[in-house]
Amino acid sequence: QLQLQESGPGLVKPSETLSLTCIVSGDSISSGSYYWAWIRQPPGKGLEWIGNIHYTGSTYYKPSLRGRVTISVDTSKNQFSLKLNSVTAADTATYYCARPLRGWLQFSSWGQGTMVTVSS
Amino acid sequence: QSVLTQPPSASGTPGQRVTISCSGSSSNIGSNTVNWYQQLPGTAPKLLIYSNDQRPSGVPDRFSGSKSGTSASLAISGLQSEDEADYYCASWDDSPNDLYVFGTGTKVTVL
Image (tube, rainbow over all chains, first blue to last red; front, side, top):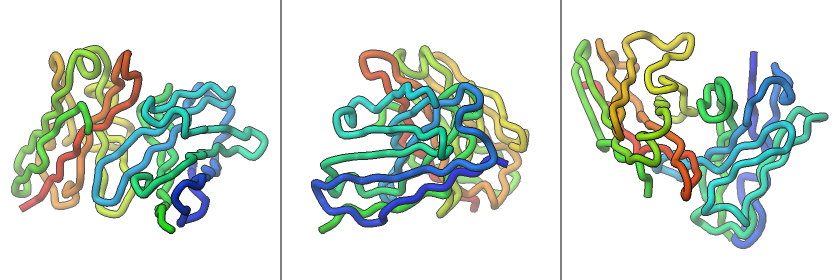
């Protein structure tokens, strides 16, 4: 059974870099043609797509975050990661990693989410 | 600010049918498929409908999706107390935006 688990610091200082990892178990990140994703949700607000990555390294990013965001994959560890630099309070959110049902946008498997607060 | 507009709230009594709308444009719903997600309080979202009207395995047939032009709808028939949740539509938005957009979200309350 596929499981995704986000990990990383729960508190990041303004202007620093937010780094999260999604550990995948129950399936190989290299199997299929999935584009694995990061999605976030500010407290009390809606969902926001951050970007996707294929195990080959091909990525898609939300245009407004491009330049600050990097999603990478480590097939040897069966995980993928998110780095968001120059964070501000607006980046405070619950961050989810997800895998689509097929292809790249029908997110059927989700991690439980990890809350990241940007504060000094 | 999302380009997919949903009503902030909807409600019904147990057994009723509730419909949630999702209004977009030619660059998103008008030219791409729509997915729907259910988010119960304090939990991760769950894929409810994909490709406009397809249900993933395990999703009850009380949930149905449709799309027409630049709008989409999610219907919940035979409303149950456990359906009380937030619901989001989502679709790809074509160039020049090139991003996956979620709707503004609808809170469904079971009276």
